[in-house]
Image 1 (cartoon, rainbow, N blue to C red):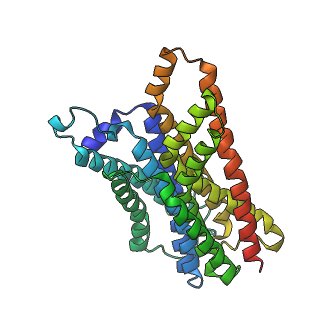
Image 2 (cartoon, one colour):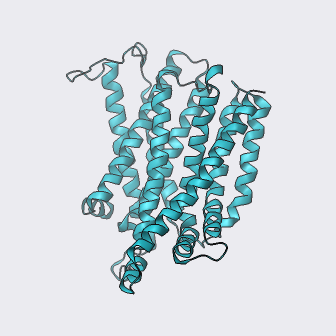
Image 3 (cartoon, rainbow, N blue to C red):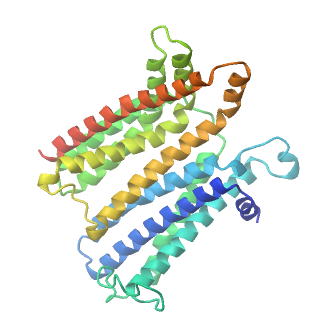
Length: 357
């Protein structure tokens, strides 16, 4: 009940984020149901399709975790312990809120899937996708409910793990591991080539590696911005980047991996593109992954901006010109683009070379 009351009394922006989580969950659930229906109709090759469908699931869970972390209702405040709202209760409320949003999306996905198959009549577009969704084959109820329950359960568990109290790590600590995992991903792609499981394994390792390396890269950007006799704007931009590196680094790395995947597919367009066995829903799946990655980064940036609002107000009260703050923001964005764009292009080039050997 506490989680529901907090959700009902949240601000419109927070409600919009939860609706976006539900929408992402609905898209992922629909894709999982499509894979299940295809496995019933054509069992051969169903396992690779399920593995590729786990990528949208992963980015949806990541988006849900970032939205839960940015929720003001889950932030510890003074005096809440006295009324029984300690860290554990707030963590539980965040996990339940995330599960409710994802369960809503899963229910919408199930209703839309059954309607397009023609099993829920009386609405527009009834049975419009009967052939695509293999309506001639019965849908296993237990399998469908299990796949749909996977989304809220995974998202709530990941939220609980991410929001639990733990000592902060230095942003640079994940950089060597990220580089190592990215190299392993490229090696896996080169070893198995196109068409095998190495494509999925390699891309997954590369994405995880870039996500781990993201905080270190953002911290390095901050160091470069304030290097060599910095003025006030560069010093402010560099310090803010270093402070916000743990928050914006992982979403930035995930978005870089998505951009690298898109560039790789474009480079391999003459060879049939990436061998993603999702059939007609490959395009919507790519769009879902891209939008979730972009929304995750945007949510992290907005949350970081909200957290530094007291410092910004203090600087303005001390007489700092507003154009200094705008210049610092432009420097931060330029530094991140100057690192992430070549990084995505380089990873894409190495991946395309590995897949064409």
